[in-house]
Image (cartoon, rainbow, N blue to C red; front, side):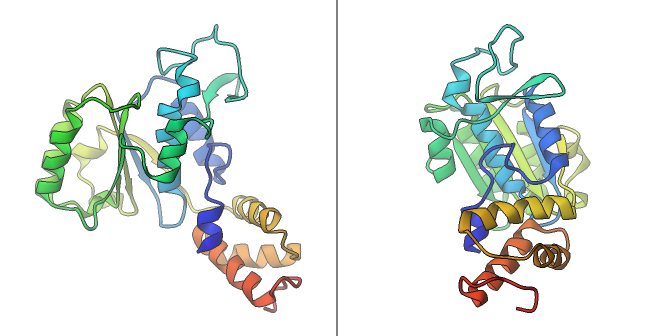
Length: 257
């Protein structure tokens, strides 16, 4: 899985799903929601997108341009701002201390929780206690809860209390492959971002970034074949491409491999 991790998107622009890019550009060009729900099958980049949102929220270069998360019309467009349908949106710079520490997983104010192994009420109670404290250095505390559907009912009830009266300095990003297992009371308090199965065009976009970065020799026909085998998963596609590249051993990659 080296390719998938090595070429993990670091900005909204690098996300390979056109639908997700457009949704996040729209979301981040307005006032900031206190809770997001990212839903979709495995291998579509939900966790990667969550980290990108965390960086966009806390990027120090963006923060210097405005005291409000909403971009003001009078702000001069910079290289860190993109234009989509005439609206300014925010992209993390990936150079400031906040962006770098979030990318490296060392930011004290951005916490990732695997609900599959931290699913009980005690873990959520501990989270509720910590969330009361102001961020150490970041603008917002961001809690990314992966596989949130794995929480117990008691844990969901405790989480709901926090979502009902969230601290102004906190943002939640809940990720799940099984949204039907998440209580409606939780869903209704989140801004929903759906991650659809990747189209062939989106998969090829992802593959070409890897092919360019690794300087692979590969036929377009082979990339089409890998896209078909991927069944809409960026992660599976990258894994197949990596396996074929390993077998080819720097020779031209063909689908016969």
